[in-house]
Length: 185
Image (cartoon, rainbow, N blue to C red):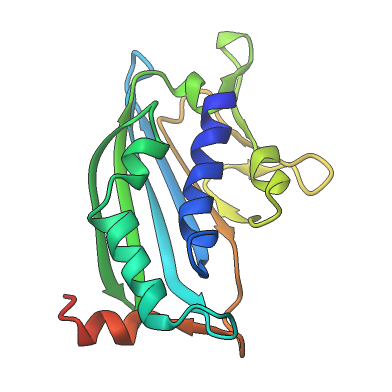
C-alpha cells in the first residue's frame, strides 16, 4: 500500500512541483491476470502550466519534455512497476500524456480483496492526502467523501477511475500550442 502511495505522490510531483505543471484530470486503469500481475496506465488529460508564476511556458514545456518524456523521472519515481511506454499526444484540442506499466501483484498497488472472495476495493486516501485529486468517476461503486473507497465486484479484472486535479481558468495555460509549435504529433 505504501508503495502505491509513493507512486501516486511522485507522479503528482513530476507534474506539479517541477516548474508549474498541472493537469485537468487523470485517468487510471489497472488490468489484472489470474495471478494478480497485470498492466496499467495513467493518462494525464489537458497538461497545463500556471502562467501567473515566475516560470515561463517555454521553461515548463522543457521541464515536461526533459523530465517526463525523455528523462528518467518516472522510471526513478515508479520503482515498483516496469514502465513499458510513455508519450505525449493531442486529443480533443488538449495536450495529454500517458504512462503505461506492468506490475507483479495488484495488492502491492493498494488494491485489496476482502477475504479473497469478496469485492475488490481501492482507498483514495493517498490522493486526498496530497490535496490535489478528487474522485470523478469509475467503473466501480464509490463510497463517497466520508468513505473514499471504490468497490468492484470480485470477478472484475479491470479497474478504472478518473480524478480531477485542476480546472482550467485564468491562471492556467495549455501546453498544446507550444507542443504543436515544437513539432509534436
